[in-house]
Image (cartoon, rainbow, N blue to C red; front, side):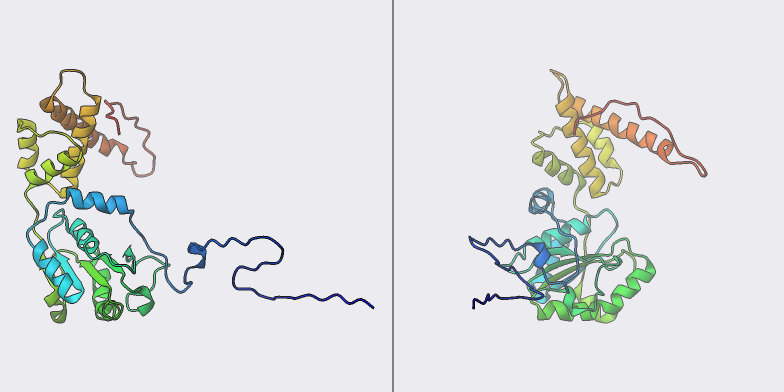
Length: 279
């Protein structure tokens, strides 16, 4: 009498080979620890470019030493001073063999509480950007900050917090606070032009633009408009013409924005008509 035999496997938790031939296994994000939260990551080339265009502001050196000594630094400073860019640049300097660069999102429904130890992995570089937080959001974050710092210390990680300017900080957290001041605006503009490979010349358009208080984002955007104006320029045009075209494109865009905002109870159907600079 013949009898067949076989093997039965129930509820496998990994790759299972049930036939002949080779077995190829690809390990990806689907096998990551299910207890770790989803998070926002930035591309390496984005971080590398950020470091190239950043003009170190006053206070960055102190922030660098604080992060190296304690694993935590809390950045304060006026809006537009480049605090978030400084935070990212500081964390880039602490790249380790383990861990990832990630941005904590405490208001995201899929994110763990800041006091949950599972939020921090070994060697992680964590950015907690609360620069636009409300009073209630900042109060909640402050309450969990000590627990978060404990997890960061235990996991040999690094944490940079960008606090909302003008908000209070608990006395035991003041030790980690560093004030960031905006760098020289002309230096920032010239640095962006250099990265775009655009030669700089002193022209009245730039002097007038930088005479007003500008955020780091505004300066970066205007430098990019100059870059795009150069690409669209005709033969014989130079830096002064590129800057004039960039200023016109910026003014046209700002003039059109109010017309794009839907009126209450209706939709805007405004169509933009202006010279378009290449991306």
